[in-house]
Length: 351
Image 1 (cartoon, rainbow, N blue to C red):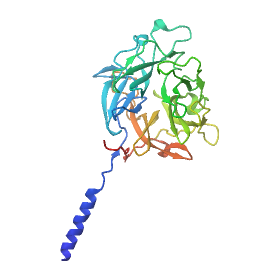
Image 2 (image 1 turned 90 degrees about the vertical axis):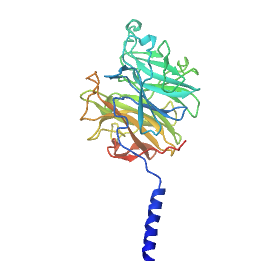
Image 3 (image 1 turned 90 degrees about the horizontal axis):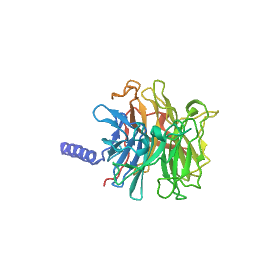
């Protein structure tokens, strides 16, 4: 009788163990290839899509805008090219950077940075510009509009991010770099042009201090009546890459924004370098089905600094992710650095 009870107890334990829900885990990087400036969205099909700056692959050649997809935000399938046809205004150049995609009006709108053709550069407009492309499908192909939304000097007009203000309903576009402030301006209803009577508003300025010597890569979220503006600086790439993520917040989508600062003057990175990863930045944020926000960003493994593609001077910036936690209504990343050990994965409801 005693032996029978012991066996029954053991079997019950195994039964209880088998009924436990499997805990999903992940470990960085979540996409181990050159995939800079990642933007993550949830498509109309329920899948997740990631878009990234151009990259040169020894097998595929140059990809203007990269795209990958995932069912669980952890395992990513690289698809390839999202923008196979260059816009007319940048058909002869090869600088396609930092795309952002928004799903609206049953269409996918892609905003990106590109270098205009030499013949359309004039006067002080000798740098990059912002363009827009449209697709019926999240993976593309995206069809570019024939004219740029805006041009400018050097690399001021890069890193676009479209945002529909949930309070006012305004369609906004954030962008900026090149040692100038991050800006925002209202879009027309067509999402392909700016409102003539809506000027660009300067938000976070480059203050020539540490990581904020240059500011770029705006990403905006809305939570508990605050607008959070994530941004990065000041040097994404190269032998002396020096990059991190900072944040500011406001009660209005167009500011003014208060920057999270140190006790004394200076920026306060919520995501900074670690011993395992350097120059983390250019983030996007997405929320899982449990309400947890996740930051996706690129970073460089110092043991594998350079891409194994044909372009030998390109840093190998891989895609990473970490959960966001809030302290006193400010978003934070655990230890202010990329995670390097297995972590709990995002929670997603089964379809």
